[in-house]
Amino acid sequence: MALGSGTERRRYTRHRVSIEARLKVPMPEHGSATLLVKAMIENLSLRGAKVFVRSLKKEHRTILMRARRQCFLTFTVPDSKLPLVLRGEIVWVDLRTEDRLVAAYFGIELAEPAPDESERLVQFLQVLSSSGSGTH
Image (tube, rainbow, N blue to C red; front, side, top):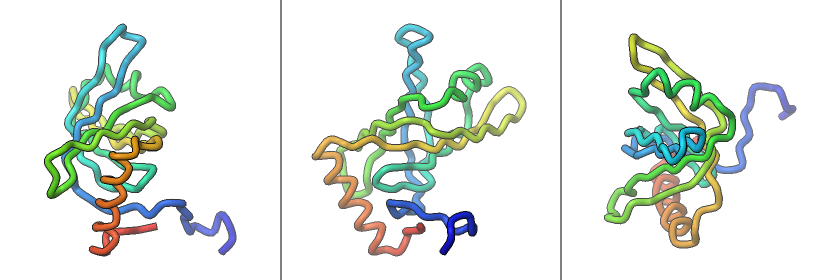
């Protein structure tokens, strides 16, 4: 199919999920400050995630809109007691403002995980593939 035809081509299969997570965003422009918020992973692949955050403070809006901000996504894979910590960069932000709070969707490009974390992530994604949750 020709490019631009509306068909999306991705290198890694995305899986629809609903996983509670913590999103940690270092803010070096504020010294050692770090934004740490509860998040919901809505889709996940080996190299990316779409994450929803229900309530951010409005003052974080400008900080988070800067391109390619480093972040850490921490969550527990079902049937595991150890949290998975994935490093990445926020590549897009879709902010939704309501009253004094801001909700946001984040597109995160995940970096190459450590070997142990990579193995656990791959195993989890294989389970999702066998359950039919993948989309391209």
